[in-house]
Length: 209
Image (cartoon, rainbow, N blue to C red; front, side, top):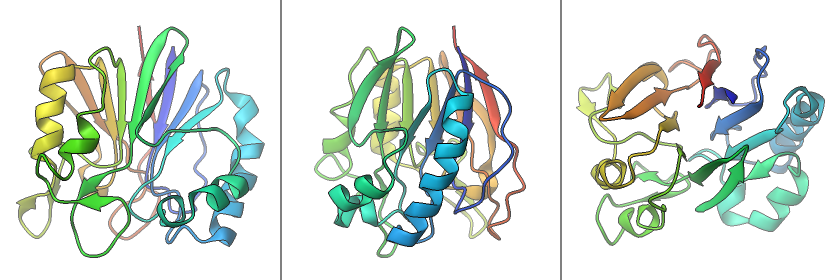
């Protein structure tokens, strides 16, 4: 399966390569307002048919609507398959998606990086997950910010070691776009925009076998 992976598009509509499945790991919008979600819906409707398995996406910390008014948001952005602490089998592979990230100011889908905080969401991730979709990174891996610190989740790092998925895809930290690994897990930060919200990073193509 050829996955085309993007994240943190913030209403941008990058040109996408061909693939079997489009994966978006959150921050589709700036604030998750209905008019913004309608713009994403229009884009998704245009491109969904280009992918054999369609579009799979999660929310990010900018996508407030999915946390505050989930049913309304999903009624507006109805294209694609949306995951929020849930999984789906596609093409013989198990995907799991979660939007939660470490606490930073007052954004959506944030909690303390503790077993009682983020841990309660990450503990739900099944051991047989093949592809893990999160909005944010695990601690120490593609999570460094210019102010001089790692911003990823230790709870998520523990979960990676427990689950050991084939692939872990995230965004959130715009300027840490790139590829890494931990054990047998390939890790991709696929943020489309840089820290100036310019869509400078290319979509990432992942061959899943």
